[in-house]
Image (cartoon, rainbow, N blue to C red; front, side):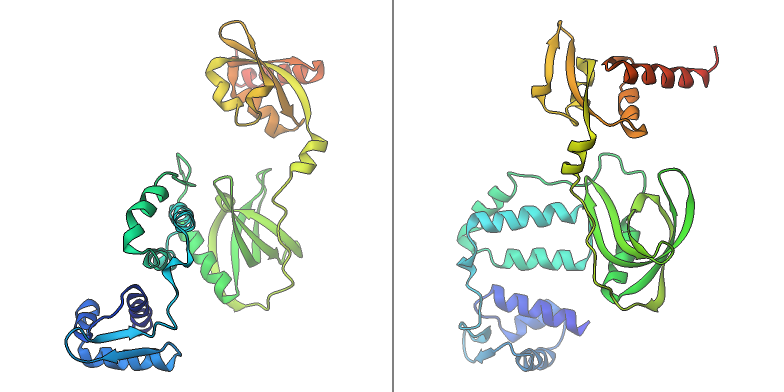
Length: 310
């Protein structure tokens, strides 16, 4: 497409001091005459491109317009590359590729090795170890719906297994703890809702558009709420599940109990999710106190055992 060629041509002119018409023609597989027309279009768009004739001549963006490549420090460019590279593992698309190319175009040749080394010192991989559902097509549909203010319809299964069909105005895609969510205004609930993409099926983008409302951002930080809800329980765990328990509390909450066991002050909320965490540790975890949590653990274990008979 012409627009994509013009954007790529601008990036080439920003990256190089001067480029000849023939070099551009070969790079973009068009005729030199087309390159001259494209340069006229770039000038009309407000980006001043001048040409010089003779040996070593060609096109260049006027120095007064160019962004100084030294405006970013080595650390800043490395940080930008680290963040964009990590995001590229979760969100794919031409815009991300183009953004990476633009950032790289600001890297001076004499600092390229140093910046590449620093950018590779930290690896940000937001993708899960095991992905049982490919949500990438849904992300692409939602991104288009966000850009064009188009309604989305889909079936949604809540945490209790209830399935409903929703019509939603999309407002924001959220990546939190390796899971994608869609924040939107639900026409059924007449309110904003945060939908987990793994619970969505049958996603369709409608032809109907909507007028955006005053957007209400989702609440993503529950630290203050959790502090008021959580209590501490005492559990005894085997060292083989220590890494899993460390996902929920720091090492300072552990104390040794013999050679292979630890006593842990574990943050706990009395709901199915937290009981499921403890039950998931199997016979490598024992709740010591309080007594009512220990009794509930016994009750749930008996119910699980009953499924398998005597």
